[in-house]
Length: 191
Image (cartoon, rainbow, N blue to C red; front, side, top):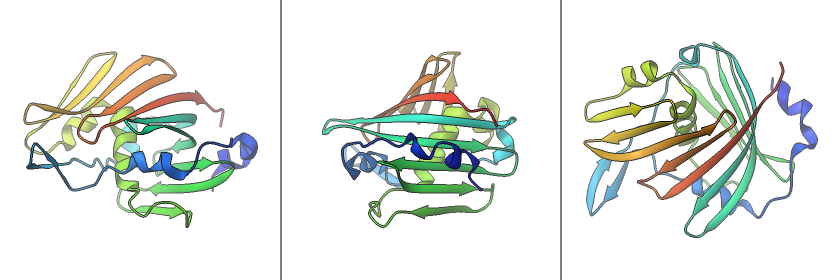
């Protein structure tokens, strides 16, 4: 089922607490900005829309004003499914499965209930999926601007999320609305 997990069972490292996962908590639905309710976009693109198979081992570093936390991830995408495993200290924290119509998750009991698999999937797709696929899924008011080194998703002119592609293995997702930065270091894994 999760071929990469078996290969990298010993990859987990001991990191500071579960609190790092809380930075992923970016309420799905609506948020507020200057006291005004605003929409939040959650992408749910088909796995096949990526246009290629993908197998990555990732180190994720979450930064907020309150601190920095790290967690490891294994990501596999093929035409039929997205599979993501977040693990910390050798323990599975979250397994996410997306087949294009149903989002399933398996989570550790100690994982905060507020952690949104839908938000994780959306950030993942905004980072990796082709521009045309993302733009075709955007509702009114949303816009995606992009260059070779950056993507910026905005709602009615306000930048909500930006992604900087620092090099082939390193990107930085800044969630402006919810105040977190996600540094992503990726290494391809031979399948």
